[in-house]
Amino acid sequence: MTVQARDVPRRRPADRRAQILAAAARRFRRDGYHRVAMADIAADVGIRASALYRHVRGKEELLLTVLDGQLARMEEVAAGSADPIAALAAHAVELREFGALWGREAGHLPPDARRAVRHRLRGVAASLAGDVADEDDLRSWAVLSVLDSPAHHGVQVDADRLSAVLLAAARAVAVAPLPDDRDVLPPEDGGLPPASRREALLGVAARLFADRGYPSVGLDDIGAAAGIAGPSVYNHFASKADVLASVLQRGNEALWFTLHHDLARASDPADALRRLAARYSAFVADDPAIVGVLLTEVVHLPADVREPFRRAQRDYVAEWVALLRRDRPDRDETDALLRVHAALSVVNSLSRIHHLRTRPGHVARTATLARSALELS
Image (cartoon, rainbow, N blue to C red):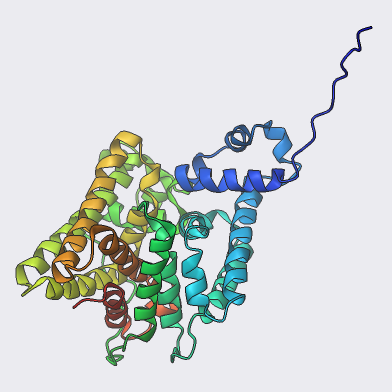
């Protein structure tokens, strides 16, 4: 006698929600939130897109849920240790995606959600100050930016080694003596626009891309901000992507110009890095919009256009790495590369925190903290 097989209903895996969140985090980080469809995430998990809505109401909620879960893990790690700096350094690989998503995709969240995440991040940062005086929480944020630096690069390194380098750099930042030149006023908003229409368009486009994200800005927005009709932008640029590429080109050129300027005046590699840290800190403070675009918006260019900009940024970092290895020959390429990324992360992160950026002495103190992450000879 033959027993007929019965169809057995497929059981939903107990960790389906975790699978969805992990797939979403990978997709958002690699491709950018705007380019990811719910169907892409569903395909990665092996389910239909409609099944995702059993877990979240939409893509915005999915992004917030991903960030909330990763931040909760960060809070758990920091709160569960008597040495939160060491604990977060030890979990750097696990926590790598939060900083990348928060830095680039936070603009897609509702204002209340962004404020809530910032408030929780302040709590994590505050736990890192320890016994070191940190009257305006500058040092706490700097330490957190060192620990978060792996989120902004793809250096392949053993987890234990990454943790050790981050811990050493973070400890150096935590105790670095800060300059007292608080009489130096921070950069002021305002100023005069250039006479060139094309240059004016580049300036307003950089600010709009940095504030809203490239996908949320149209040519009409750029034209209106510059005082012209949107279609008139085509007199100067072939497309919105051309505007973005021109902004990125301008930012990269500025970085390379200042690098050559500092190298020509440096007495030795350590002096060159001190100059570069000061110059980069001033550049980021003076023009946070164009730096923000350099850091977050390259992903929106077509792949064939994107790669030259990525290469230029890697080459710029490589100049710092070469100088650091000449100053500290005891360090290998990987160690130096991680240190340079940590130093740049300090500058980039502190420039995005308004109450720190607008304090007198911000540039000098930021440059000092960035140099401390390098631990020059």
